[in-house]
Image (cartoon, rainbow, N blue to C red; front, side):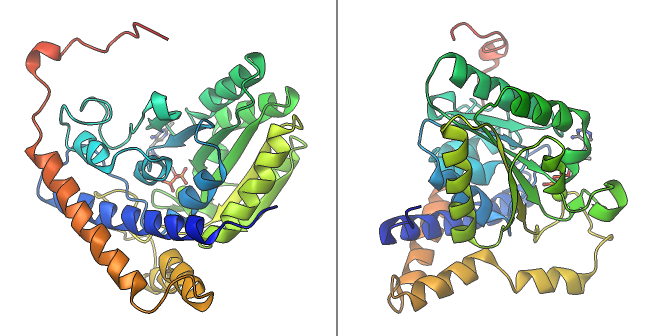
Amino acid sequence: MAAPSNDLQKKMYRQMVEIRHFEEKCAELYAGAKIGGFLHLYIGEEAIAVGAINALNPDDEIVTHYRDHGHGLARGLDAGAIMAELCGRATGVCKGRGGSMHVADASKHMWGGYAIVGGHLPLAVGLAHAAVYKKTGRVTSCFFGDAATDIGEFHESMNFAALWKLPCIFVCENNLYGMGVPIAMNTATTQIVEKSRAYSMPGEQVDGMDVLAVYAAMQRAIKHARSGKGPYFLECMTYRFRGHSMADPELYRDKAEVELWKKKDPINAFRSKLEKAKIFKKGDAEKLDQEVLAEIEAVGQFAVDSPFPDESTLFDYIYATEV
Ligand SMILES: Cc1ncc(C[n+]2csc(CCOP(=O)(O)OP(=O)(O)O)c2C)c(N)n1
Ligand SMILES: [Mg+2]
């Protein structure tokens, strides 16, 4: 399978830095009461969305959970429009109706952002079925957390996808916790990839802190799914550096554990690789970091300067008018 070109590696590094700064800006805007509702940050997990989505074609389908800003950015949705969505503004990707947990843009085959744990998995199976029915050749990539694999919809979706040999890639982001509950306390099978065996589905456990490892595993998954062999499962091992949501005081995990995982920061690790491979020259990473930081400042400003939806539009977009 082809290794990513130097340009693609640079693009992926930039996206990871973009997601990191975007999320840090989110935390700031949330603290300043510019973002309301729930806010779940993806900091620490960037390598998964970036590695996986860059292996897909732009018209392959994506469905994800509420920790969804990184997937939207990796798919190429406008950062300003995502931030405006989080701030509930009319310029948001969903015109301010969805907020943080519902980042969606059907024109980019990014179907969202869903708040109900496991609730989006049947939608992914439906999209994969539609691709077979309409012979589009597209694969669907579905992202979800480790705790979602204990939910009934997970098992129903895995079963149907395998039974019908659907081109669906199940990407589990195993960050070892479901809210404040460590994985061993809520699931009987802590090696989550083992759950794919029950459905005779090929699956791999991947280092989710290594963007190139995720990219390579996703290439294998895509090749399998697109060739008509059916679904594929990836368990990406990762860790969220922040709390479950902004409302989480994080009393359930050891500070030393968090620090240990921060040493495996996926951005630092990739940067070292790029420098070693001479894809980055001295100073390149710092320059890029400053550029992205300035961009994200502008993104934040755009969002807070944008208008709220007009009251007259309150009942708009409730029913779909076109397919
Ligand atoms: C059906 C359902 N039950 C409970 C919740 C509350 N809830 C929100 S996130 C979450 C934990 C999910 O953990 P995981 O799937 O591992 O994803 P992570 O947040 O770790 O990325 C729970 C229980 C919910 N949103 N939906
Ligand atoms: Mg989890």
